[in-house]
Length: 294
Length: 333
Image: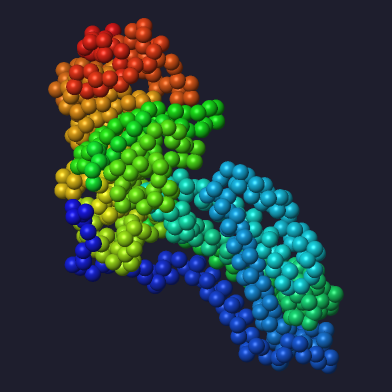
């Protein structure tokens, strides 16, 4: 084939349109703020052993029920005299990884179901979607509680349970986007270039799914934090003596009348974390909306 | 390499399964195309032109299948190849470009990456080299400032530029055959002319045989050596473009030509639309499928389907012209 436009060296260097980080930060202030909040939370989880003023498990009966702003115990102490600030900081080490793993489980299983369902269609789609519908029929937390009840309490099973609750969300999302993408001509155009179905899915289809998935991951991370706290509150998640937010609320609930901060402090930690993830998901959804992109 | 024609489509029947039956989307289509030639396929929406192209590429939707006939390309029977062998043909020997340039590029990748994709698939070129090659290809496809353009995303390209990028991608592996499925339909008129110009230049400079699918007779007149007119999944007329346009021998072609405006027509001469609508493809009538809309129809037309036979310089599937009658204005009331 000598009549061909063959591969020749370009005279000029290829220039990429740069994506300037500073511009991105300036145009998407909400995303930046939310991202910073989430980053701080992860940082806290990472360095909590270093920054905690006290051992979260150290029992000091003499110092019990100290109110917040007591010198040495900024957020006060609980019924056993354990420092609340230290326990809340250590609690991040439980909640965030659990949320992370649960979301990963949901994303992987649900994403795979959605991908097969949307791409293959037909009987596979029908069967997979009925399975997803069955999962969706249960309220999320009830399903999670049922799964943990079946598997037995503990953090590992809580992660699996919360992951299963997230499966239908990802399956439906990925399937919907794949169905939409299948209508676009670049799918058949890519096949016409000689791409194998596997290459088409991995290199051409999946990158198009990333935007909605990133948004959903941040939103369901918020849900996962809340679900983990709920399971631990019920005694189905983290087991004693692990410092865990849900469990701290459970313990503090008995002292709500006289010493409400025992429950309020971990409650606030949960609220801030869930808010941060939801804000991130929400702002990312706005920022990544293709209709708003220039 | 001793083969009679570059591409030989032999009595292809492609069926589509739909809710209330089977659509015979392509029903016994045969044609050939030689190296360097330009062949036009015209017809209304649903006449089977795109399905013919997708049958050649074996990229039919899941509901569709080739039930009969064979496609031979450079002596190899495409319809007998395994899926792996067919994948090796697509994008190397046969390239295809599509109607809607807005959705035929992947929105998440830079243009250069996409234009270089066939080289990475078939020539195992690395990414950097493929993008360097893309610069050259884009330049050949008439995109100015190509070194900058390869780094941009599809949404930064206009429709015409995207179609140029698609053409560049199609030509990256220097195929012998380019199938262009309505390449200009989604573009405005001045851009249409530019894209057709580009296709003509590439056909001339690289000798790439081109199948141009369109519903625009003007495009065929300006581009194609030969033309095939399709109706209801069948070829109704086939011949050299100048013969078919000068004296159509099928009433459908005749009606199509009378329904387009002409510069040399009388100022007050009204355009003549074709009466009726295309037939229901699930329940086709017996006999010639154009009979209900045909101003020349005779008794035999509704009962027996005519063959595609030589009439004067071309082939026509019509009892009337095969019987020696000349189509002229007299047929219309």
